[in-house]
Image 1 (cartoon, rainbow, N blue to C red):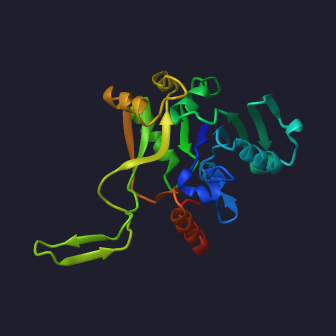
Image 2: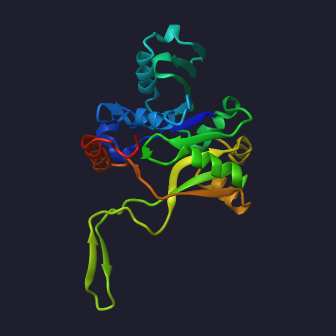
Image 3: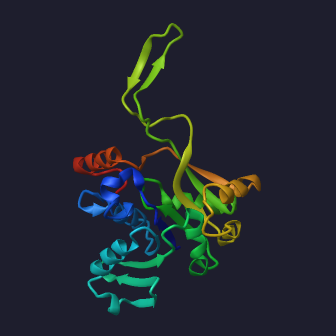
Length: 254
C-alpha cells in the first residue's frame, strides 16, 4: 500500500527553523521528523512513500538524494523536473518526491498526486505528527467499514494544566498538560479510496474543509479511535517535548 505524506506547508509557528528549512525537515534528535514518520510506517512493512513537496521542497530533495548515495542524475527515475523517484536499498525504501506547488493547499496537493496514486486504497498523513497508532488495525478498520475515508481520531495534549473540581470548588485533581480523555480531533493518519479525490476541486481546496465535510455528509467518513500516543509538532515547545521523549529512550512512536 502506498503512503502519501503532505510535506509542503509553511510551518509559520516554527519560524525559527522554517525560515531556512521546511517543517518536515525540523530535527527530532539527529533525524528530521519526516524520517521518524517514515520509519513509523516502515515497521508495518510499508516501503513505498510519495512525498508531496511545496515550501522549500528542494531541501527535502537534497536530503533524500544524498541519503540514496547517488546523484540526482543517477536517481532510479527522474520522471520530470517535478518528480524524482529514489531507491534506498539499504533502508528498503522507495521514495518518490513530487513538487505540488508552493502555494497549493492540502487538498490540492493530494489531487496533484491523483495519477500516481492509481486505483488502490492508500495511506496518507502530514509531515509533522508522530504517533504509535497501529497502522494494521487502522487499515483493517477501513476495510471493515467500507467508507471512502477512514480518519484517525486522537486525544490532544492539553495546552494548560487540567483541573478537576468538586461541587464546592475544591481541586480534587491537577495534571500539568495531560493527554485529554474527552473530545477527539483529526490525528492525521488516514486510509483513503482514490475516488475521494473527486471531492477536491483544485489547488485552492483545503482537504480538511469541503472534501472531508462532504464525505461526512454522505456518510463516507469513518473514524478509527486511537487512545495511545499522538503529538503534533507545531511549535518550539512541541519539538522540545518530542526530543525529551527521545532522550529518555524508547520513544512511543518507535
